[in-house]
Amino acid sequence: MDSRLIDKTVDLLLGADHVVVLTGAGISTESGVPDFRSPGGIWERYDPTMFFIERFLSDPEEVWRCMLDMHRSSEFTLWDAKPNRGHRALAYLEEVRIVKAVITQNVDNLHQKAGNRTVIEFHGNMLFARCLKCRQKYGYEEVLQDLEKNFTPRCRCGGILKPDAVFFGEAIPQDALKRSFREADECDLMLVIGTSAQVEPAASLPRIAKGMHSLLRGLGGIPLMKPRCSVIEINWEPTPLTGDVSDFLIQGRSGDVLSAIEQKIREKKG
Image 1: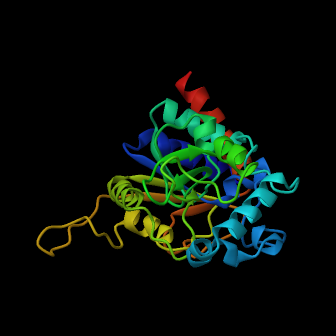
Image 2: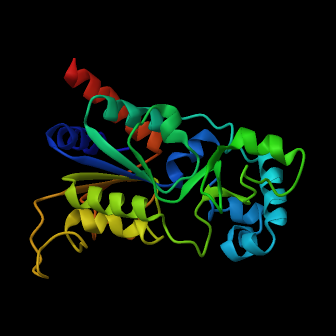
């Protein structure tokens, strides 16, 4: 962890007007939530096709049995995971009105548990379920009680409940997509934390922040230049953004880096 880059990031945060944060699985691994693709990740433990929408629609009971197994697994702590230092640091940055919004690719609800209020869930939230028929939303504890009695859990209207996360083959929720693009377009500083920046369309958000392409800027097909925006990565290793899109990369654990940033901002604010 480069202390000079920490200081530079603090100065940029304090001087920015509209800071947006994009987070990926790397911020939650310190809370015991495994990521998907790395060795020992979720795809090594569970069949990835369980998370295809076609499979859910064809056999929801099978998918819900897998979900119940994941919930009961001592190796998979998604439902009882607690926010770590990185999550709490971002909640503090929102509390002091530095961060305007957190866009997360995670489905673990940890930003909300930490205290962030403006969270855009790009891929939904696994701690809830939603009726495919009437769109009513249920908390996971209520769903688990239903699963003790019958498969598949159903809404009061009779519709099938589905985990409220985006499955493969499903579109990103339009509201989350539009809000994320708008926040990226309007920000003058974006922190990109713990993401491989390889999954679209989320991977395009830093490029939108930089003004490299935008669906929102310009009238009549004539693009307008975006004011200067800084993109700072916090990650264990370089990504496709490094050296191309981001201004610089702070290598290290997100909890360590964000805690250091929080401490220095608290000192400067007195």
